[in-house]
Amino acid sequence: MTTITETDLGGAVADAAAHLYVWALKDIPQDLRDALGSAAEKETSVTGQRVLQTILKNVSVAEDEKNLVCQDTGIAVYYCRVGEHFPLHPARIYAALKAGTERATVEHPLRSNTVHTLTRENTGPNVGFRVPIVHWDFVPDWDGLDVKCVPKGSGSENMSFLKMCVPADGVTGIKKFVLESIVGAGGKPCPPGIVGVGIGGSADYAMHLAKEAIARPVGTHNPDPLVAQLEGELYELLNETGVGPMGLGGDVTVLSVHVEHADTHMTLNPVAVNYQCWAARRASAHVAADGTTTFERDA
Amino acid sequence: MTVHEVTFPITDRAEILKLRAGDEVTVQGHIIGIRDRTQIRIFDQGVEPPMDLTGAFLLHTAPNVRKLGPGKYEKLCIGTTTSARMVRFTEGLGSQYGVRAICGKGGFPDEAIEPMQRLGMVYFAIVGGAAALETTQIEEIEEVAWEELMPECLWKFRVKDFGPLTVGIDAHGGSLYRDVQEQAMKKLEDIYARL
Image (cartoon, rainbow over all chains, first blue to last red; front, side, top):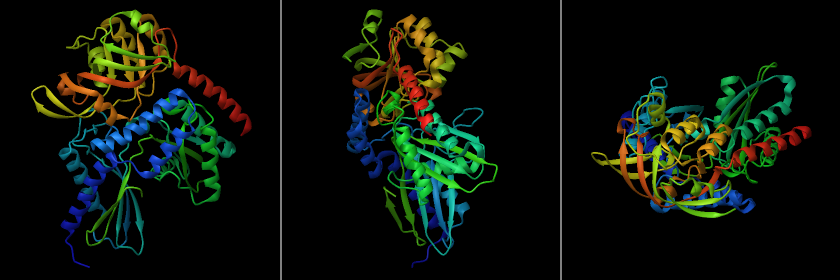
């Protein structure tokens, strides 16, 4: 293994972030393309077909024109898995992710969305106080870094819901809350997309889990069979509601339902819903301890 | 379901009355980009818009652009944002400025139905997120005003074969969004009974 300075490794992480942000915006993963294709095969309504065919055409136009799939460049969200022996401290990783986001925004150029939450004034090229947003996981006995970039659009993020159900509401309460949230959201979050559900933990942790759930590829299931069964049931029920593509009515309301859970207090039963639009953008990279970077669109 | 091709601006109410909720529409001519801050300036701060909105087709957008020179911009990626945030401006846009069509994604809540019927306006649903395609249908950014609100300026675009759009709310009191919500609420009752 070649030796590498902290500065060079920081540069590699920044390069990875800059590449991932733009790549995620332009080239949506294969699992999503497949899910959209099978949605179009299933949909029987005229308006639903019009919407899905337009979506499929848009994905190929973005590829041909090397353009962004959606104009909303989102708020940059990164998921990091940091190995115990990765030779760059998370504080430096954060700084590198921020620098990469900023550089991608200026060089492409991308629309800058980040504003001060009270004054609403733009704070810079998609960076600001505590932006980008980074989720951290730490892995023992490993020296690598995995980074997943999920630019999150506001149309879907605005359709986030939290309910502190009580234990007596049980699993039925959880299902009802997810159903009423998605029906209430209607066409606003750009359906059909991925419904992320976080259950258990605490109020903030349930939403954190819901957000992690939307970043999973379509077709993956929770490893806990009980939770996976809930994913399947919610998927079937949500697709009975008739909300349809873009909320204009139809058979396909959601592409997938992902549930993440944590154990909780005996008197808590929190449920959080975080929606991800059909343009569920994400792209991943692995940065090795020597700075070598490999990219993977579909992780 | 009927398929229409229409050219904006449209001042004649009769042209708008031909459109029914669920119809497919392709648009030619000129459309005007507008967003939250643009409308807050017009209605909450009382600033007259420096563009004629008579008979206009308004698009809820904040585009990705590259500045070429003073007041001149190149399109990079132009898409459409969620309309529901801006529903309260509908009545004023129709009654004070003569706007005929508002286009966005996700729909307008039911409070838009009455003013749209009274004033002869329609809501067009575009496919949210389909910005790469939408960008190819915008031929040129002809004018921009209020650049200090970037990217939430007033934009004038010349379009060709803009669509396909779906009439979400028509000028006869029809709304696909209301119908879909009513049916979904009934469906939820069935589902809840089974849980």
